[in-house]
Image (cartoon, rainbow, N blue to C red; front, side, top):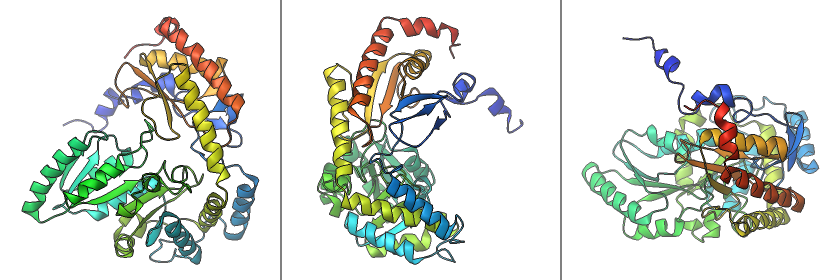
Length: 416
């Protein structure tokens, strides 16, 4: 028997072992100033490509005024208690009605948080006799929801429909013995690579297998579809999505989430989701702000148009300069380079200190060893100058990487 914490002292985890070199700069960095295309990092103004404020709503005067009015009207406490007990309001109902109309589902339920919400939805929908089949590249919130499942769960290779079919056969064989059902889970847009899920192909398998489909559309809501109402509309399969989920944390530039579907299913979730039954209701100030944000998205398609002008300019510019941006079909813009973790740390420091560019860095274990992923999130607030400066800087840092500049500078970083 050993002290519970002994393993922690010996093993900080694949990311934690870099804490002494990385914390405060590469991880847990502090971006300061109004949320926009340019913010401050360690006292210097930088072009920010790490903010999921896709439509540029966060710092609009109209939004800031609405949020200020809501704070004065409701404070940060109201309503007190969980929705089921004492935290239900007309505002929540109004927002749910607007969301249902926007995503064309019969009913919706507003949730406190995105991560907590999707995790709890999964936990509530399935029992030990059921099987979950989900894309192996699903976000951590989906993975954690699946981990709560007491029954069988199978992953299929990312966006691989043959792999999905094989696992549906396995699932079908299992539920024929247990009398359970099958839940398939995918994302509308995979937030690391920017690829859309192969939703049409997944839906087509409903003719062959009897399953229900849950879609996490965090990155698609507000950015895809003719009106910004999601990946289901982009691929013309919205009506075939059984349970639709999205968050307010990206296009809506706020806190909270929602789930939509047939009324009977949403009612079941309302009365059985433990994360909502036993947690404080989303504050009215945030609900009030979400209604304003949704109204702006519906009434002003120009926000989405500006976003996509910037997305196309950035992604086309990167491709023209020979960068590998993978198979992105969304605003998420990954740039793949080859290098070690120490090289990546030096490269990103160079970008921030000498070129004034702040973007997210992703390394092993999130992606394979020997790869560096720089993830850029274009927004409606970025300018042509931002894009041109970034394209020029990326060309220069790639040359330094290829010439071995960063590997030489990284010798001062201890390899682990």
